[in-house]
Length: 372
Image (cartoon, rainbow, N blue to C red):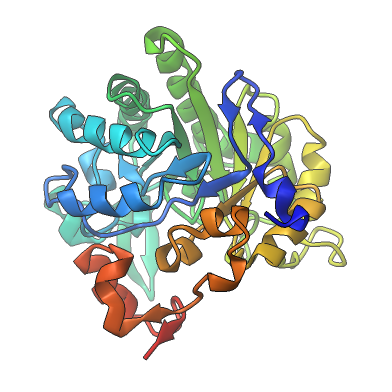
């Protein structure tokens, strides 16, 4: 291995004492390949096995904690004890390759297609309209409590299935972010209004997960939280809101914070120093209080090293690992020149991608580089 890349493979210890063998993680990516009932398919076990061999952490595709939170065709579920056998296989498949298995838990909120949720009843922090048409209704107080409980129960199932941890999906405009954002939360009860009130739901979810860990885990169990830094809309989340979010979460006993970005070197739009990248600003604000994981267009070893040199302790790779599952192995063993950065359509089988995922990639020109 070139000494230039050594820092990618330094071990790291999380606050709860779990030791990671390197600084690299598989980012959570939707793969559209679970069975219709949310059970784990053979295809996704093959897919995840190939991408678990060389990384310290594997974060799964998001799993919905309650049936009305399903946001994708082929989404894995974690909403019923009936799903435990498949969830157990999922965790063991990852761990057998040497990585820590983290299941991301999730509710899609207004992003759920009506055909995927019971009775087409799409939910949000508040009534939500698009082009004058109501597409989601406001959750009742009772329903809010039920979803909070569901996150706790999902955590229990993750523990019983043998996962090493969970990641709360508070990013990408799904339900948890919908509560925090003034764009989607116009409630006038305790769950809305001020920034502090809008933060109640994320914190209640986090507390439910922590209580489940305390009650059911008999070994150190990783707890991460993923967030998006700002929204383009007005009203919407700004970097000032992000700094407040980070301040609160950094004091909550998390094992890591994971920022969701399309480009790790992107710059803020407002309420922050626009001469620094978002990750630099957030990392400065965290100031070592909690480990920080970053993601977004980290494709080449040199791009990864640049991020490490900016002081980021943990890096998640996403789409590049669809193309090159053994990316880390090649970097570590001095074979960086052989890393592929484009899918070769004629060699589909070698990537071990589920058929639904492959077909979606082929239809989304520019979603990943495609060599024709």
